[in-house]
Image (cartoon, rainbow, N blue to C red):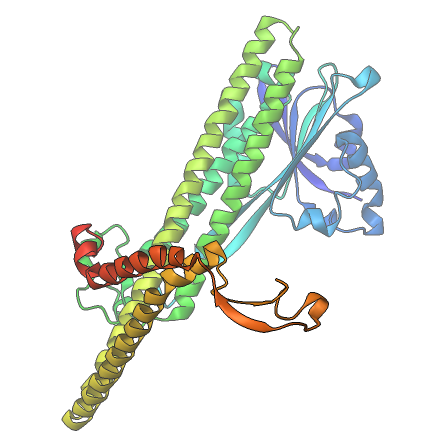
Length: 439
């Protein structure tokens, strides 16, 4: 199957650009570093006409066998790698994926926050061997990313691609950072417009089209007649942005960690090569910081938008209550107040009754506690033979009578003071709590 590819190839005098059939280029390519850009629409799924190209790419880039399944094509991001064995011990292959949501204005839009959107679903595969092929396959890259990567190659050190397989990654990720920058600022404009709009009438009047104006120009008496569909759409865009940036930061963490492991593993390489690899690692860390900053901004925008939704909800409830009360007659308001006062009086009576019950419970609690602690059986029944009143095994026998324990005074010695102390504490509880600063 024929697939047209755009190819950037490193030569002695710089990077060259050419268009060529993908399969033909892979069969005849040299060991010079190169970037290949293709559209993946003919690679998705398991169409019979793409089977031979699948096998070629899987062998060339050491791709996972299930890379063409829907699970991978619909994923919001992943990173994987593998090292060579035996005679390919210095070979290193990677595959990773990023998603970026791009907004663009609808033709003839009615609201400033009306946008269409598209997804940049970016797939990358690299194969690298110091004495062999060095190539990155880039799938579904938008023109801005392709041009940005080409511009980055003009300033990239040619030695990096010979020494470090992750030199390809730093070029791709630099371009992805620019895509995220464009995405995050467009979504910021949507959130800012919602914040400044205040109401559907203000949006339609065109007063909120100046995105950069201060929020101090927000109308003082805001009309909460908001179109919730547009609030929902804006929230959905921000949530998607936060999700993709969270995944991207995790992917970059994995890439940086794997790069460090490789540098530590190659401990006996020349110092010049170590310097190159450290420079590549530093660049990856720098781009990670950029994407992490975008993630923080997206999370902040999500919180701001949620705050705006909450404000609209409060204003709407307040307006509904004001409208309801304004429509009542004086007789209705007086009747409502009478019912409210009656409910308050009933609640006060219930509260007083509960206090009495609590006081009685507290008064009897000390004596009960003492009785349980010492296990006093206040009235004890014994027969003439000293057995219990029921007799052994529950059979009765002999004369029965009731007698009081001669240690009963111990119960009173503890129960009476505790009960008196409890009643005193209840009587002066408010003063004590006020003095302790508890009320």
